[in-house]
Amino acid sequence: MDANAPAALAARTETWVFDLDNTLYPASCRLFDQVDRLIGRFIAEEFNLDLVEARRLQKLYFHEHGTTLSGLMQRHGVDPAKFLDYVHAIDLTPVEPSPRLDAALARLGGRKLIFTNGSVAHAANVMNRLGVARHFEDVFDIRAAAWIPKPEPATYDALVARHAIDAPRAAMIDDLPRNLAPAAALGMTTVLVETGEEWSQPVGDSTHIHHTTDDLVAWLEAAAPR
Image (tube, rainbow, N blue to C red; front, side, top):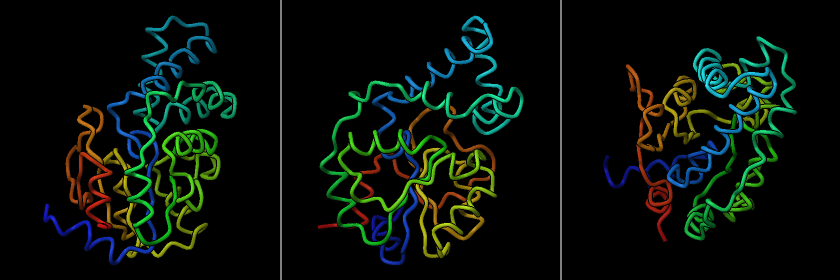
């Protein structure tokens, strides 16, 4: 990618839409592994299953419904608030406070939003741990999305409507290629944070991915240099 591309994008961007997990913090800290394990444990306890079968259902629902929660709600009527409280009861110490991220966001012009399939409470906990909460105007979470997760296009429409986003002057940053496709379809510029995880690799056409980085902080520093 052109070294000047981040700065060029920043110059024309009015609204920045950030995913949370494995995007705002590095996937290498393995924080989301805790959530992943708790999802399996929740299913095991809720349906009296062993962990192997619970894991199978967890991944089946994730692939078929976008999130495991969506599958649990649609197929079993699971209470989403109960689920989110359970799976977000995690230890945040693997996430290191990030003065560099804080400084880069401070220099980055435009509005900044969090767009997550998690909860507002989880987003607040992570942002406070990183030391960056002050930069974000709002968190558009799974409740705000009427429990319809990314990458469903209706959820992106709801985000754009709620925050009056001019999509051609917006950028979305996410670690999952499939979550960037609806944003690109609306006219947003997309940035993929590459984590190296198998489940985060692009599949098929990837023309909806406009920029890539394996280091979000460095990319933002290039977008808004000192």
